[in-house]
Image (tube, rainbow, N blue to C red; front, side):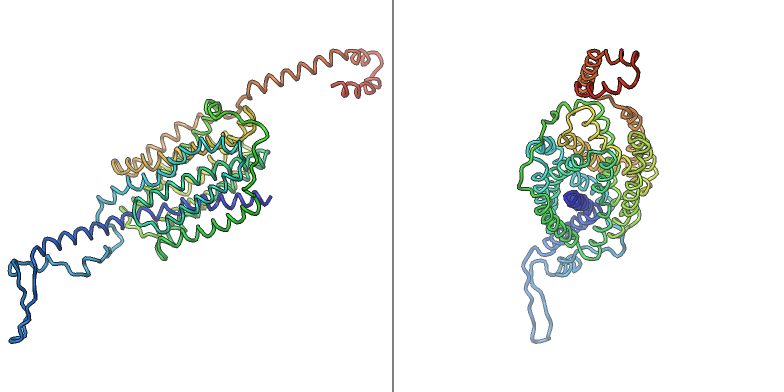
Amino acid sequence: MWSWRSLSFFRLVLVISPLVLFPIIPSYLYTLDESTDVVLKNSTASQLAAPGTFHSIVSLYDNTVRSSGSNATGRSPDLVPTALAATELPHNISDCPQSASRLVNENVKVGLLFASKATVQLIINPFIGPLTNRIGYQLPLFAGFCIMFLSTIMFAFSSSYALLFVARSLQGVGSSCSSVAGMGMIASVYTDEEERGHAIVIALGGGVGPPFGSVMYEFVGKTAPFLILAFLALFDGALQLVVLQPTKVEPESQKGTPLLTLMKDPYILIAAGAICFGNMTFAMMEPTLPIWMMETMCAKEWQLGVAFLPVSISYLIGTYIYSTLVHKMGRWLCALIGMVLVGVSVICVKLYRLCCVTGMVDLSMMPIMGYLVDLRHVSVYGSVYAIADVAFCMGFALGPSIGGSIAGSIGFPWLMTIIGIVDIIFAPLCIFLRSPPGQEEKIVRFKAHINTVNEILYKHKEIWKAWDTEGQTNMANLLPKVSYSI
């Protein structure tokens, strides 16, 4: 199972890379904007203070220095900035930000930056799903690795909002290729539903990202965490070349169900909705929680990511526990309970409880997507996991963009209350996933098979006569003939 281990390792790097950004970007953009404002103010002050030309005149007679110029005598010495002040970056005596209004406005910028990745994934996913059905999973998976490696390097050395936006968008392209191909490969390798759930648990891990990013940013700098991730990605790329052999084109043996047909399936839409709203809650907290902590708690950079540490631990522990529990309780029931608990937890801003139950929803819905295809459609998984990834991306596209605007307008607590109520309202729809019906064509085939068996039994009605007249011995002698005839 080395191919699965390689895939799980890459999925881990794939998930950690975007999560590293959450605590770094809000603080970095705020510092960048504040530095730009200070330089502009100093430049403006220099222009106001020096409209004319000045010359220093040294008098050898009385050893004095005099300045000559148009406004030499009417100058206020406070307006002339020193060279140090013109180049000095802002430094707070305390950890509290100097401008609260600018910090609130960062919600929108950070939200749009985070949402750009998911928005690009929404555009790319409908093409990746059918592509994996045609050429297999290996090539898209390796292409995703190459793009993610490039975006990670860009993050390490970007120093402007525009470059960060481009790097984040590239992450969306790489994640689209890797997520759809990776989840589809897991579903095709693990046909048993319980084994599939255990495999997806490991593929969903990666909550170590925010604490790792914040601690590295505080004590080492912005570049270091991304270079470490780029090194890990290179190691996994070499592993993929050896194990998965991405140069081979391996199309699926059977033609998959069209994407539009899957999107019209109401049960797939309910599962996709649970994935979307369950993850939208966490997506809204990504850009807004660090800014809220900076505004209300004067938190340091390393604390912004460590605040997500309960999220990471509870998510990993919860998913491993639920991997056994959901198979016994039923995935639909775990998803329903998880959605309700997500809503309650986010209203209370209980981070450890929130991501524990978010993992419960993901762990329930991801295998259900593959199960619904097995039950109601053709067992080819590229397109259905493209839909799952689209749902996941809608949560992470709408969450940061809308959440940043709402948090800037009415505040962070009201934002959490709104999304919590939405999760609780959506939860009862998971009841429909309790026993979804099979596809009509498969039911017709099953009925046709039953009719064929009945016809064969009718042709061999002498067997039943033999049962009545001669007993079970003759019946046992005739059974091989029936088996041969069938």
